Length: 423
Ligand code: ATP
Ligand code: MG
Image (cartoon, rainbow, N blue to C red):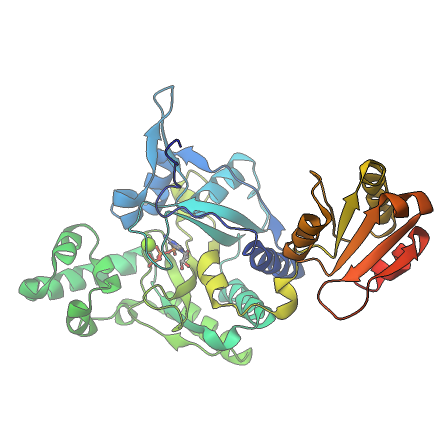
């Protein structure tokens, strides 16, 4: 036999048993996004590399070592999207969607990062991204958080997720803070790990984001950004916290929350779960007011979040009825030439009459025994049996597969009311 080709490491197939969970979550997401007035935008999977360099930042993990970058046949450098914010903003600027108007948008789909694959961390993964443009106050930040809370509630996982928030201030405030941080970490240079030493020169705030437990004590003693914020940023953050309190949203202020991407300003937040092991952040977002201008637009406010679908779905308990969601209600067994022909037509009539019905017709022949086995394996609730005798008489035999009951024969006309009881 020829050697089998395997999927790429970290890029997973979603098998039919798993897709009902995804479809369920996607349906809930769509409904709730619509309820808040967010509209879908669909974006290319590939963009010019320059777009990500300029938006995410040269010295971030993503751009330094995680992007799938390649030259296309014209010699242009292109990259598979590692996240959606840059492409979304690029599209909005390109099509004038930000001209004197606000926008509330969402997108969903695959993202690509060349990371070390492990539980909750893949090379192709899926995000829901939600972005709001043209609104500078903390009200819209709170709206996004409330939208998340509603999602968790609808999905039955509200108890499993905790909200952490922080304010990163504006770029000038961060620059001043950065200088303080560099002084602090320089004074403790011996305790820095290799990654942090490199970041000390390039992006010292990222040291705070380190996942190395040996760095935890040192990081806990570092000066905090909160002390470096000016009055406007403080007021913005206060506004955020007050509105969250009013809406009864529980949160923790985490002064170490800095987020991996360069473009954030003021509000940042993460929804974190303790049930997922090391990869506990399910949803992360914040304000990135500077980015619109950085990508060639007019100075404009922007805030958004991205939710990791794999991590979210990992948290879900699968409701009973969901396990059946994709499975057929009926399986139509047919024996003999005349019955085989009639089965296709009968099935069409049943589907016309019952649009919700999921019906599989046995194709490819087989003995009664083997067809019956297939009916059972299909997960169907009922086997419909059409032999040449039934075909001539205009009847069909029915046998329940998941419940007790004798096989019985019905006129074909009575099938519709019978099947209706299974839907
Ligand atoms: P992490 O700290 O886990 O690397 P990040 O800061 O790189 O996360 P973001 O870029 O903010 O992640 O992406 C938002 C969300 O997308 C994450 O909270 C997570 O749920 C999901 N996510 C990010 N990278 C991956 C990945 N490689 N595999 C699966 N999900 C991911
Ligand atoms: Mg990452």
